[in-house]
Image 1 (tube, rainbow, N blue to C red):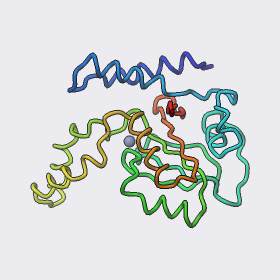
Image 2: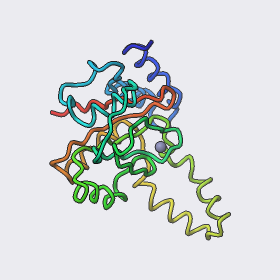
Image 3: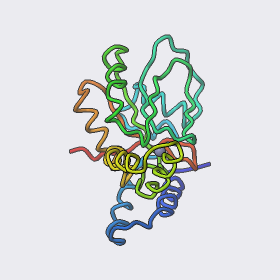
Length: 216
Ligand SMILES: [Zn+2]
């Protein structure tokens, strides 16, 4: 049985694993520590903040985290926008959700797909689901492999390098929680009448955490 404390400690351990960064150590660690505290575990229904009661976000969390029995759906309830990572497997009923997957759960180059879901399918709720061990974190570490791999596909080296350089700012993530908060804010500016909620998936626990945004 898990409780809030255990969840938090486990999160701390997961984040510490990738603590070695190129930036100033003390500062970066302090910054990251403060970000774990923004992750809200949902281990029982009462953990859900009032603002999400009776929304599709409540259903998402009850189904996935708490294994609530599935309702049947005639129409889609929400859009899930998440990373392509194979470890993210959501436990959701049929017809419940559209799903867009993009590296790092990034939003910029899936704007048409999201707009379509909002405008045509009349989606009123979007869960933006990042995850802790995303390969888009410190994307530079994959640069050599990316270029070499494309060369093996027949790309010219300079073309592969140029492509990586161009896309790095779009897909690179320095901090998962901050990236989710920033992208959720951006989504809200695009679709101000839609409920947009940043969520973080823990690969180890296979559970979702709400991201607290400390919005003023
Ligand atoms: Zn990822």
